[in-house]
Length: 282
Image (cartoon, rainbow, N blue to C red; front, side, top):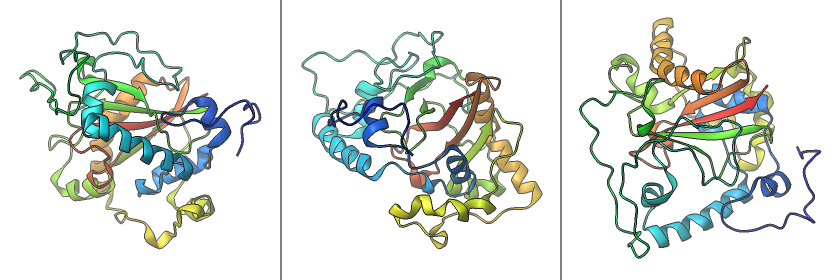
């Protein structure tokens, strides 16, 4: 699905390391449409969301270099990439949403030029007055909102943003015990900025051809069966704080979003919670 306005491969050399937006447009064009993306999110199996396979290979190579330099991906995030309480100034991809209001004192001391980057750093304990769980009221010092440097195969007009939080997203105060196992297997997801309902999971078969290169078939899905009305309401309640946060940052008159929180089995960095947001300007 090449972008008609994208520059040609002749003028955008293919590099290594973090990709630029021009590289994504030219060398890794989107494999999924916006409708397909929303269908995958609403299917019940967040594992359907994929990165371009060639971009994944580039990512895997980059990861090896990161681990050699920093010791682990967690160290890289804590030592460098996550700027708690600050706007994202490190992204090569940029965003149409600006977080001017995020400017708080650093919670970690800056590293000296000769510091050993492989030494694990620990975030300081949360203060007693920190919120129990993530919501639209979470203070900015507990957040790092960044562009996904390695986005999934999304259309060129869709931003893939990560909302990292020191505050738990899954918490017993909002995840009822009766649906805890389901939420831990499936994660949470939702949609904002559209009065129409999201694509029904029943339409997934029409999207399967877009997943052919990953060898996906319907029988490989990992998802819970649809629950009772009460269970569905409890799952929705568990995701409401995230939904409220997304609506607050991506104003519904201007943005349509599909958001999700991976279950533990799909989390790339265990112990650091984050929300994925696909945002499309109207």
